[in-house]
Length: 329
Ligand code: PBG
Image (tube, rainbow, N blue to C red; front, side, top):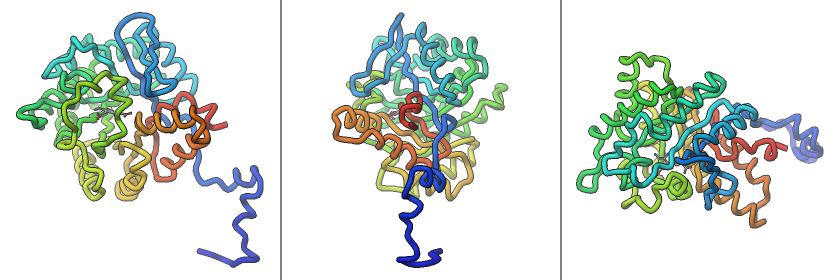
């Protein structure tokens, strides 16, 4: 591989000027590489700041066109909807998930009516925005039930597909749910609705600001370690992906992003399937707050995002997705 040696060979030669660095660049980003998360909230005329996430907001439905227009103008292929559900609508079973007039369902209908197929809509399939205990599934004796939770996830998926959701993204980490959701979609006439499985989702300390954004933070009892993955493991990630591919996932997600670049690469090398990476809220918050304080250079954002591409990600879910013009400059 090395075809010469110092002093005739100098790798710094091709780094000496900007045009030359651009000429030999191996990875880059375009808007097509991004999915923008959008937080929804009840009420009118609201664009509500989220304390731990500078420049990220919760939007009421009458303001939703502002952020969707923005996403389309920036050339983003897809947005991901996340509801901040009012406390009084949350309960032990998360029944609000199956209400066809919940925030997410109303938002999908609104966006699809106005924008048709101009932009893709992705929705999480999981119960955590709707349960009074903040977990992704049903609980019995402090254990998150698997098969009983799947039954509700199937209904939630079908409902979101009926509303017009393009990409269902189960983020709950129950076993077997991809296959069961696929089967029910096919049976009910939604053969073309895509599934992006959060196949590799770790029980992470980086989700804090998101739980704040969707209002599940103070509610969460215990942790999610008996369903989300142990961050000590990587072989297990391959088993998770293998199962979800077999069950019919169209794409898989690795989450969080930056601490798991090795996993993105592993999955990409072992499965020729689109791999998405989620630069999660804690990563966003660390970077953005560090830059605000001046302890981190702002090009650290580009540096982090490119690392996902270098690791093999096809696209990145990122709260920076609508702020790329500045970052790429
Ligand atoms: C919930 C869900 C979480 C995120 C996306 N979907 C949090 C969790 O599992 O507790 C995290 C996203 C982020 O931190 O940006 N199923």
